[in-house]
Image 1 (cartoon, one colour):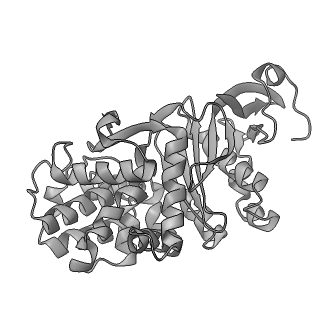
Image 2 (cartoon, rainbow, N blue to C red; image 1 turned 30 degrees about the horizontal axis):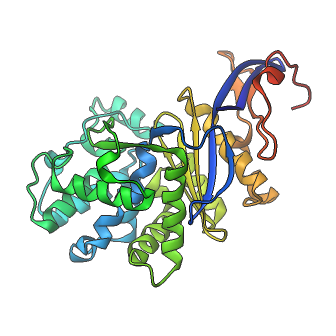
Length: 349
C-alpha cells in the first residue's frame, strides 16, 4: 500500500491515509497500480452495478417493465430521499409486494434534509430509507421472475445469490467456488477479490456495453446508461457519485462502497479502476478519485472546477473555522514514500 492522501492541520501533516489504486483494461492488463494489485478486499457496494446485470440478462427487468431510473436505484447506495423511496416502492408494487418483503434492515437516511424531516415529525426510518433497498428490491424482482422463494432471498444458499455470485465470477474471471464471502451491512453476501480483479470487472462492463456482439451487451449497456442518465438515483443530491457522473456527462460511471472502496468504469478508454483506502475512512477516497481522474486526463480543468468541494476538502473546527485540508499526495508515475511525507511541512497547498 502507498500513501494516497494526507490530512493537514495549520499546514502540517497530521494524518496519512494509505491505500491501493489499480487501473486495468478489459484484457486485464495493468495500466497503473499503486500498492500490490493482488491484495484482496471486499467489493462492498461498488459491486452493485455488476450485481444488477442478472436482473436484465435474465429478462426480468423487461418482464416487469422496469424503468431506467429503477435500474439505477438497483445499482445504488442511495441517500433515502423521497424519489428513492418511491422508486423502490414502485419496483415492489410491480411484484404485488410491499416493503415488509425487504430484508435489508433499517438505517437513518444519508440525506440530511430527509433525516431532519423524520426527526421533526417524530418518525422512525423505514426499510425504504436503507441505502441498499434498491438492490434488495432488484433481488426480489429476479427471484419472482425465476419462480424462486421470496424467503431468505438474501442468503448465500438462495439460488438468486448463486446467480449473482456466478455473474461476479464471470466479470472478475475467478472461480465462484474459490471466492471467499462475507456479509454486508444489509445482510446480503459480499465478495473478497483481488483489487485488480475488481477493476477488471468494471473494465469488462464497459467493454461489453460497447460491443454489440458481447453476450452481456444489452445488460451492460442498460446499466451504464441508467447510471449516467440518472445519477441522482445512484446516490442522491449533494452526494459524490451523483455529482461526479453529472459533471462527467457520460464519460464514466462511478460507485462508492463502504470502508472507502471506489470503482470506476471509463468509457472512451475502456478502463476499470479500483481504489481502496486501507483505514476505511471515506473522507480520503473522493479527493483521491478526483486526483486520479486528473492524472489520467479523464476530467478537464473545467470539470474539476465544478467538483471543487471534493478536490481538497476543507476541515473545520467546532467554531466553523478552516484549520486544514485533505490533500491527495500520490503520483501514478512515481509513488512517494511515507517517510518522505511524515513530518513534512505543507506550504501553499
